[in-house]
Length: 251
Length: 123
Image 1 (tube, each protein chain N blue to C red):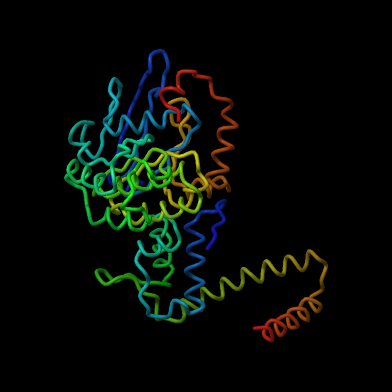
Image 2 (cartoon, rainbow over the protein chains, first blue to last red; image 1 turned 90 degrees about the vertical axis):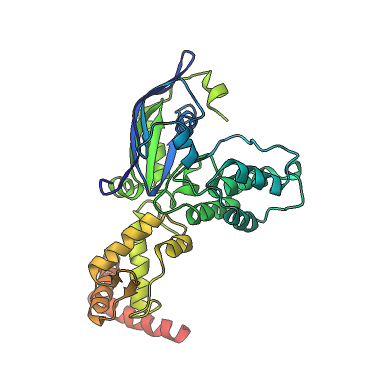
C-alpha cells in the first residue's frame, strides 16, 4: 500500500459513552483509491468510528488525519456520509430529496443522482412514506453516491434490501465513486460485498483485530474473507457484554 | 463468472482473461476494456482488476500504450506459451486423478481418445 497516497490516518482514537469504551486507542491507516470493508461484531465500534470520521460525533480523543486535514468543516465538505438511520422526511417526494442535497452540498451532481435513481427504478410520483424500506435505502445510497466526494462513509448500506438488490447497489457503488476516492463501508453481510472490497478491517472491542488487502488475506489463509472473519472472531473468544452499546451503537 | 472466494480474486481474473485471450474471444491486437468496465462486468473492485491486468502486461499477454489504452498482444508466441502452460496444468491434474484411480497409461490414452471424439460429435 506504500505506493498510494495516505487517505485516513488514525492514532490512539478513544471514545467513551459514559462508562462504556466504544473505541479503545484505535490505530488505523487507510490509503485513498480503494473500497474498505469495515467489519466487526455488534458493539465493535464500526458505527462510532464512521460517525467520528463523518464529523458528527464529538468528545473523542486521539488524532485523525483525513487527506491532510483535521476533522472539521473542511473534511465534512469532501466527505459523503450514509448514516445507518433513515433521515429523510416521510412527506418528501424524490425531487424534494434531490433538491435538499443540491442545496446542501456544493459537490452534488444532479445528473448522476437522476441516473442512479432511474437505475434503481424508484417511483417519482410517490411520497417517501409510500416507499418500501428497500426503496428508501436505495434513494439514500443514490443521494450519498451522487456527491463528487473524496471520502465516502457508508454505514450498513445494504442491510435493508434483498440479495438481488444488493448486487445492483454494489454495482452502482463501484461505478459511481471516483477512482482516487476512498470509500469505507461497514457491514455484517460480508459475503455480499466480498468481491467488491479491496481492503478489509476487522474491529473488536474498539480496536483493530486484523486488517489488510482482501486478496492477500485470502492468499495467506486460504479462506474467503467471510470464513476468515468467522475463524478470527471464534479464536478471539466471546466479546464482553456491554449492555449500553445496544442503545448507542446497535441497530 | 462465479468466484471461488477462498482464493485471491485477482488470480481468478488472470485465469479468466488468459482464457479469453487463448480462445480468441479477446482477439490478437484488440483493445481490452477499461478497468472500470471490467470491474462492472465481474462485480469486483477496480483495484483488483488493475492488479490482474498489470500481471497480464508483465507476462506479455497485453501491452499498455500510454494514452491509447491496453491491447491484447499480436505476438502469437506469448499466447502459445500461455496456452501451453494452462493446458499442461490441466493435464497434470488429469494424470494425477487417473493414476489415483489405478489406470495404466494405455487405458488412459484410449479413454482420452474415446472421449475426445465423443465430445466432438456432441458439439
